[in-house]
Figure 1 (cartoon, rainbow, N blue to C red):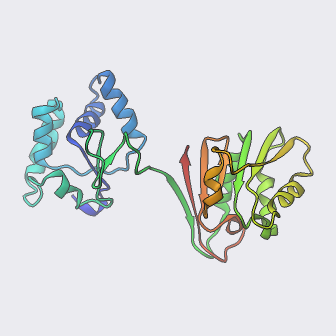
Figure 2 (figure 1 turned 120 degrees about the vertical axis):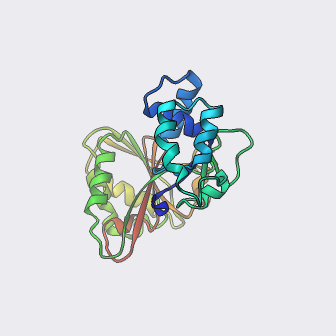
Figure 3 (figure 1 turned 60 degrees about the vertical axis):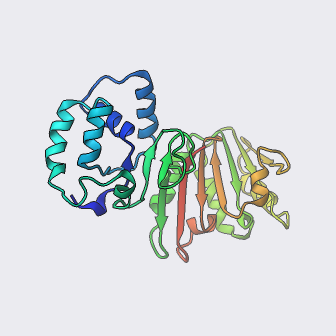
Length: 253
């Protein structure tokens, strides 16, 4: 085993469920729910040891074929075969134990029910790196857009940001924006959308609960259909410019 390649550790219960599904072994309703939750947040690869596999067989009905396959090999790893989960997690990249158990809420535990830590997709470009893959992905997301929300207090300060609207399909779309301090974002968005009468532009009221988070938000966001959020660390302008790095974090709302 090359431990540097391992990302997380699973609790005994989740490890057993994960391995049951791989056999495959029929899962109970609660196990299926836990498995689905796990797979939506899991970062492979998973590190385990002999002690955990033995506990899972004794207490969580780990299938014999899984036990027989893993246990003999794990026993040969003398320096880690008896480590606790907390100690084992220190050998992984993210130093986390993924769990669903009540009371296991603080690091190193990542409780899937609490969502203090979330799994996201990240696309990054360093300065001078090609932006086309990121723009292609953005274009794919926007083809199904019925509503988009733009939050970037510097959005109107970069003429190149009008390129964002080239990705929108020719259909009815509501385009929402957060106004900035000098009130230039609204005019900029309206000017960018004037060529398509199917697009409706709306200013968001940040005194409303739905949009209040943006009254104090520094990061830049594009929200599509109220379901997918893209956080752009350096702002929209670096989608078009290579002068600075940009990271796009994509998550489900």
